Length: 116
Image (tube, rainbow, N blue to C red; front, side, top):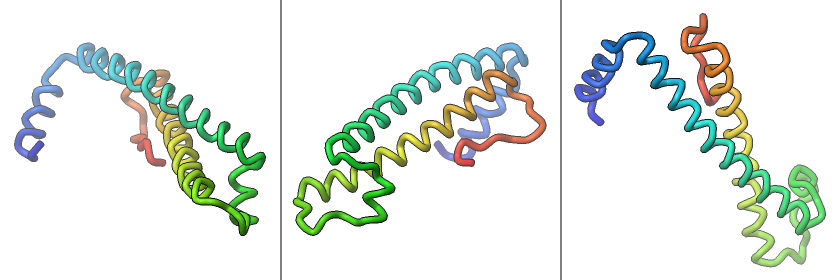
């Protein structure tokens, strides 16, 4: 979306009554929270599966390093393990921000950023 279209859409959104804007954001937050919770559930399940498969935790594996006899599958799993831990962490942060918005409303004294 180019800047002129974005500006037009933002202007239209801001022209709506506050109640309508609040309803749109609230409903959108609820839908997004549902998606993020599913993503978090999936990521935590993948992390748990890999921890059980290798009978260790990722930080311990990071410290010790992969065993000398680690096969191709373990190398791939190690990379994916890091990915799923990152996905779980980001989903948790995003959920916390959206829950705060849902609880406190849109008009907080300081802006929130999902990446914080």
